[in-house]
Length: 304
Image (cartoon, rainbow, N blue to C red; front, side, top):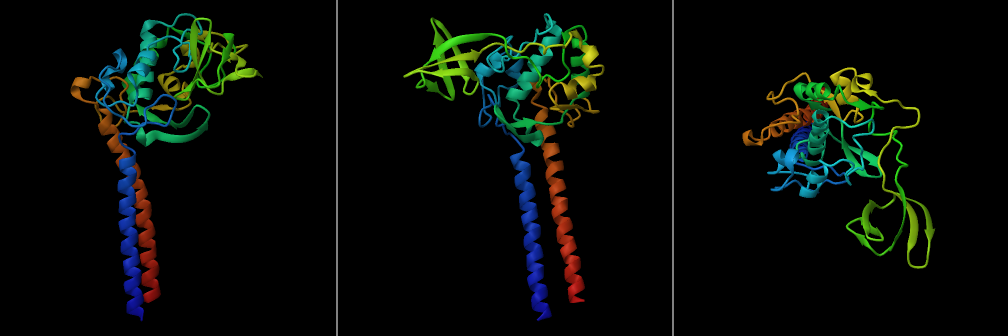
């Protein structure tokens, strides 16, 4: 009887070990070559031959569309209606880093190890603590030192009440998740849910639509970037609510995500994502094996 029980326990332990290995492999795969479930991302990455300018390094495999890449280069684009010039004109040297940041966020399929679920109206997932290569963060900070801002966290706390317009829209014009609305000959696309002060009519609805952009909150003063971001680490880690963290590793190390890279040399972030996916799945595998070992000790104690 004891030997029969021992055999059954042994089979159970072997099954648990196999399951642990399978889960680790599946977890590692699910972290690679994926797109976030967010506002403008594609469901799956794929080729986009006509990605615009600074977003073009991702054209062989991208989570962004050509249109998104074009909008990423515009001031107050339809992507997020974000005004880079909220404290005067941002220098071109500084703005190029924010464009590149947007391209990385919208286009990269190599951020899977850092994707986290969130409960937000405009996205279901975000990135958290992506290890940004040291040079990318330092150059971003250096090139923005002479530009001005009024906040250290650009994710929230802005005044969005600028640019109210009265429009009338037909409730039956919903196309691909957006309502097309027109006033005379001017056309806007706006996300469902940002209407205000609605007044229902028989077959249409008049609403105040916020089609403006972010402005500094009341009482916030404009200062050079170094006032709100005294170090490169503060800039990279605080500006988007810890989407990034400053890495001690350098470009080409295979241990940090590069915002800038030469596509002719391949995408170095693929190797980085694989490394961290292995680390994360390995941590889960170690936990599973600890459980197996613990049960083995219990089995030994019972049968001894």
